[in-house]
Length: 175
Ligand SMILES: [Zn+2]
Image 1 (cartoon, rainbow, N blue to C red):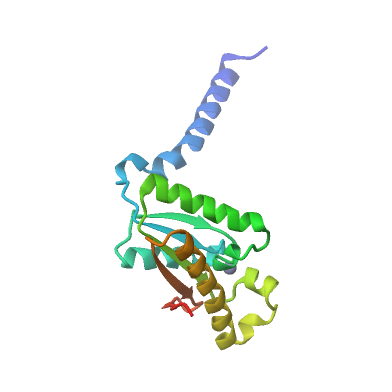
Image 2 (image 1 turned 90 degrees about the vertical axis):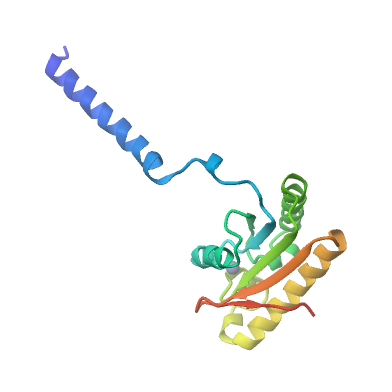
């Protein structure tokens, strides 16, 4: 039979557990209702977590804070070539169509990056050991992505970037 004391202890423990589950969301999240909905851009990046923080800083520095939708696919531009599957290209086109329809975006920004595992898998496992060749290969796939987007959405602006491990964002001009 449960004593009052043990019941109270269990109740307190239960309360503490509930509080510990609730507190993080109260402490670290904010209402998205406070964020103005005015995206101008769809960003396509790789899934590589190492670059997320720099990518956000880069976009903020371009005065795009709270003004972009964001989709991430392994290899970024490489996904449009059907890597690893044709469905990945389809996923990008679906996201672009939704972003364009719902948020009337005016621009697509694609950010590839140095030392990309997806590019290593598709092109050459040693690709990142030759930085000049690596950048040229990215330029080739970024240019293909540029042309395909332009064909489907001639009204959209398109910007291409190559993010380095040193934190630079190099603008790539298509072939
Ligand atoms: Zn990558």
